[in-house]
Length: 282
Ligand SMILES: C[S@@+](CC[C@H](N)C(=O)[O-])C[C@H]1O[C@@H](n2cnc3c(N)ncnc32)[C@H](O)[C@@H]1O
Image (cartoon, rainbow, N blue to C red; front, top):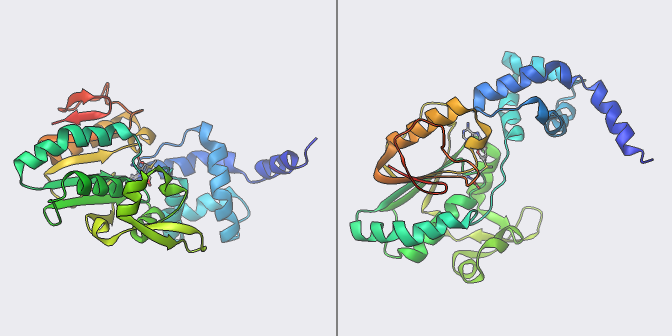
């Protein structure tokens, strides 16, 4: 009989998360729109346990009291960082990049008046940098300021990573070797691991900013393309519907919204036209 599961079980019963889980998940939902149903209690426990230790708090009841009070403002933003899921990768969901190449780039080329995109929920930058690389490959004549990619996220931890634009070698494996050679240069992570850094011209396509999708948005459209992929999956139906309507208001007529392939817009009220899975057009 392994010892560690027994030890874990003791910690779980002592930490009093069950008593305050509803309060913690309500605060998380209010700030970020992210839903944390009861089924996520283990995940919340494993992610927030480090915060209890760092803050030297006896249990989650003390943690809930902290984040509900004025002294907990800073911790609230750390909590949101810790509880959001930031999984991403270069050229994730390749069908979107194929669609851009085959259908959107020819239109941009013909129109000849630049391209503006927004990666909403960009995590550590792989999504906007993939788009920048594809634009450089497909439309080499298009350079900033005629092309601009706004990339925003709620989490300052992932935005810092996006700003550094240094990715461990294993992360860059999903980039085809010829593109890796052209758009990255060898670097080291802070731990001295072999890594690749996005080269400066490609970086200059991307403007990073912290933005909570639940809050008012300071920027004005119109955008040719909005990517909000694998973000809305964590929101409830009303929040997703409102968000899609707000995205639509910022798209130019004929502009595109890309969502994650597991997040269709079925049953949501909006004025976008379905083009193909996870692609909508105004
Ligand atoms: C799973 S990642 C998706 C990254 C990328 N779009 C992709 O598909 O690879 C989801 C991102 O959404 C961000 N996010 C969650 N709630 C948010 C909110 N209310 N406002 C802005 N970003 C949010 C998270 O911080 C996280 O980085």
